[in-house]
Image 1 (tube, helix red, strand yellow):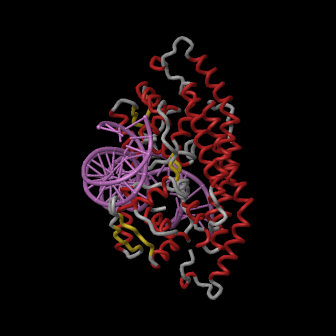
Image 2 (tube, rainbow over the protein chains, first blue to last red):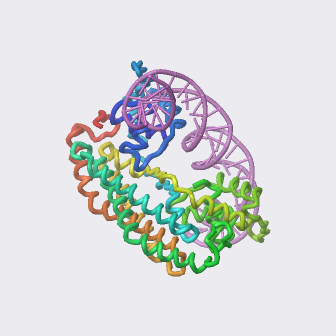
Image 3 (cartoon, rainbow over the protein chains, first blue to last red):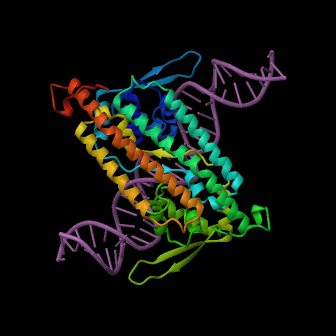
Length: 192
Length: 192
DNA sequence: CATATATATTGCAGTTCGATATAGGTGACG
DNA sequence: CGTCACCTATATCGAACTGCAATATATATG
């Protein structure tokens, strides 16, 4: 989804500044499936404003930097609708964690264990916070998407807990076999 | 993961051309968690070659365009190792599908149903192909990552099948209530 | 026989990322 | 009571990346 449409989506739920849009993608309801940086959000808002898809009100705050609050216009809602009724392009996933587990046999077992445990703890926290949040007042689509994300994270936690010990045993056995003569990673020969 | 490391990872499993690396990210074992375009892969390979992390052999093929086959060097394997033993940065997910379901109440129910059914069919195909593939010969890390992806897709299919009818009923009821006077999307008033 | 698909690379315009600059407020700690 | 780290808030800039077209050839598909 291009950043302009993402901004329209956030603004369709209520007025927000560029900073608040970023937060919605980082910690808020969009954090599980959208990502955008300031370097793309601010230009996107400027373009949307020029196209009259959003209105901008300067808010002089005391004790805070000035804030530009954007509101979606009727044309903006129409543009959001137009962007929603096209078949979605495939998900783009970039996961260093999966990349790392793929090459698990190259990684020292202790380091790998720490990474796996951190991942489980992280997602358990995410799930706990998601289960806490009040959904009954939210629209059907938001509830559905929330449940879908939850199902995904819970499945990942389950799998990791059920399989990580077995993986670590195999990795340890493999590394003991292939490099019994040294404890230094620097002198290893490529065993991949 | 930067594209250079991604290329090193692919090449650690065997020699490949830029085109073949792209295919590994599109259809191959990396397709579930990595993405990169030609425009980033070819420059990355050129840089890796300049840094002596990969070797390049020009292959003049008959009946095909020439091919540059890259092989990872020992320094390349060391660089891959160095990139693997740092804590992975958070996953980056960009999903137009999730974005769409989040705003389900804005979307015509028939269109939404078609999108949901297409998604289920797509992931069922993915799961079927993943279950087909022979894993016993693959390294432990690859098997583990494969299983993790499979668990994720299966959880998503389950959730969609269990909850899509309920969502569509709610959406239909909502749209019938909010716009009983018209069947045209163009004349709707913003009901979000 | 036209059209589409697959192999294989390159270049480019536009988009996005990540870091940095700016600048005051807030809370914690000894 | 200083100061240190972090939060709010916007803007900018180079580096990196994407998506697309161009180029060329061979094989399927209808």
